[in-house]
Image 1 (tube, rainbow, N blue to C red):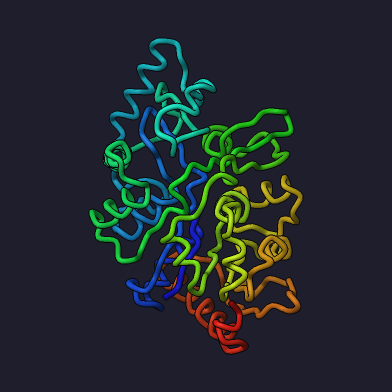
Image 2 (image 1 turned 135 degrees about the horizontal axis):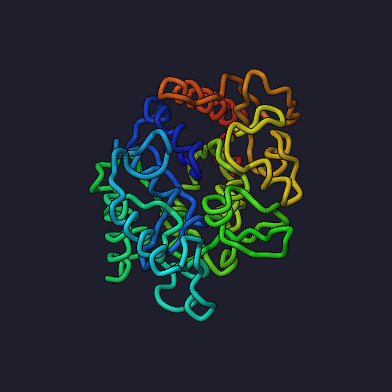
Length: 341
């Protein structure tokens, strides 16, 4: 068995190659849920769904978001109605009392559907309606995701990081506190980040299925260390579990150049060096790293495998996954996993 920690687009891309290296039945994927929002009454789980749609063969690979060739009639009509009544299409948080009312899993991230600032496709919306309805019927998020994974014929075991609510909130230098989806989708990565909060993490816990998955060798994919992996690390017991099992991390940087997304700005905002060296500092539990051939970073005391880490297609993903396999093999050769634990 091998477990991948997934968020954003980096790790879902890597998984396309991982399923060529490991038997898909032997792969667990723990997905970040700190990015989730309740939009218009429906729970949207972006990082869970990217893995779900990619594994199900329906992902829009131009955007790495939503379902390919989906229609957006409902979304467009919601925006037309909002403009018609003068309400606009900016993110509209529900009030403080509403944020902690209703289904607990949606706490601190509830938005009105008026204007719908995130584009939700029609088939994509059906997934959110189904997931939310399963929650309302009394199922856990883990159970709801498992039902959807079966519907999309997913080969890997997809696990949300927790059945409890954790919300990634961005504290900005302008003094505002906004949800990560507003920061990244509505405001395109502005204003400058002063800090990042994982609200609710202290009162949440990883599920038993996640705890079991973290007892296996772990690959931390090339995801954003702050907002994709950070919410998982904020859960009680997760860092300790990672310190007790072989862990390989793939850097999303080449030196101090990030491949994509807001990782550099977010790392800088939380006081971490935006570079591979900063990622290594953020992952003290990682025994080994996969770095790009052109990355000048040296990591004394950590095993390093080098390859071309850019992932544009499944062959690229397989190349990086095989480097992860070699790195795990090197770690496990140094000490028996039981001794590591």
